[in-house]
Amino acid sequence: MPEMTVSVRDLCRANTMLRKVNGYNTTRKGSASQKRLVLLDVCDEGLVFEACMDGAGHTKQIASVSVTLPWADRSSKGPVPQMAVVTQQAFTAALAGATSKQQAYFQLATDPDAVDAFEFGIGSVRYTLAAKARIAERRGEFVDGMPHLFNDELPLAHTIGVGALKELLPLTMKALSDDSTRPVLTCACLDTTDAVDTGVANMVSTDTYRLAISEIPVVCHDDGKRDGHLLLPNVVLHGLNIALRSADDHEAVSIYRDATMARVIVVDRTGVVWVLTWIDNGEGFVNWPKIVPTPELYRRDVSYVAGDLLTAVRQMKAMGDANVERIVFTPVSNNAVLLETEGVNTGAARCDVRFKPGEQNVGDDAPHAYCATFLIDFLQQLPEDARVMMRSAGPLATAVLTSASMTNTRYLVMPMQLA
Image 1 (cartoon, rainbow, N blue to C red):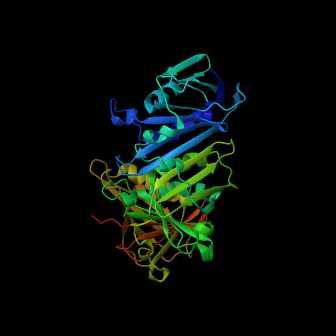
Image 2: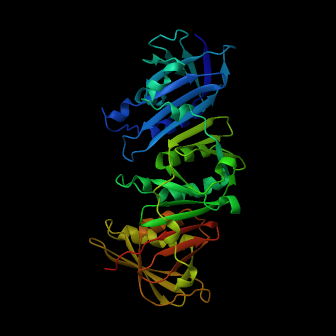
Image 3: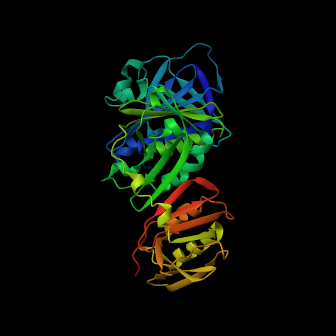
């Protein structure tokens, strides 16, 4: 049998992506997720892995992933056309204990009807997985009638810089909802309404309690020069986050789309090609511009050192009621705000957070309350010495957080009821 090698490091990264798309669960034995399938396709370019989320899961998302790992070495010179299907569980178990510096050795039977067609080894250990070989014409069976997720050609719509996406993705993903009854909120929205004229799009996510908005430079191609929204499901964002880890900041991510489907392609510095495809018509997202308050409404503008505020909020969260996570902000002087929380078993906790006097508009001294976790999610994205501005129109109004270290990002947090 012909033998080819690929990097175990790339193999493990690909498996992480496949598990995310598959919805594979390692803790629930006998669950349907452990029976998810992975398609292996051997081609001249490398070893291709494909997996599909069928929309029956928690967020009703329909998506597919294709990862091409370039050959590090192959013993045969000609093409070795071969397909095999293995379970995600067996493939994940075979990778357990492997180290990133090793090479994986793959062998696939030349007989397309062979049952045990898939064999690979890491170090001195060889695995033979019961894999049913598939020829290319039968690929549609693998995705239960949805082969278009892998095969359809889509027109190029946008390109976005890798560095810009890396910066905004962590906060965008924090603000996603996990409410399966409102699946549109489990997606982020790439709003390209004004992108043709301005060259800037907005990446927006919300769980209705907070809203993350990041401006991002975008190049619109012929098929992207139309107003509209692109919804990126949670599983696509997680996959994109994995793919970008080894991509150079100066490279670009390509987005392809038509009226019903979208695809994103990333090529990282090791030559691995990541392709994510999903069903999307761009409809149903919230009218986010109406939620953002206008600057003239602000009555309180306070600038903190991000590290100081993060430490104080974490301390208050540790002392407070885990079911409420309410932090109360009350101005106590011209250079300090008092943070307070109260727990059932820990009692009341207070601490002062100081800011530079003379540069603030504290406004009225009414207390404002916000969720500790929501504040931490934003603050931990910033350098410790960064300045963070918190603005609001009153105790019942949304707080808007910004920072000079993330100039193109706004983070809105809904207030909480005061006890």
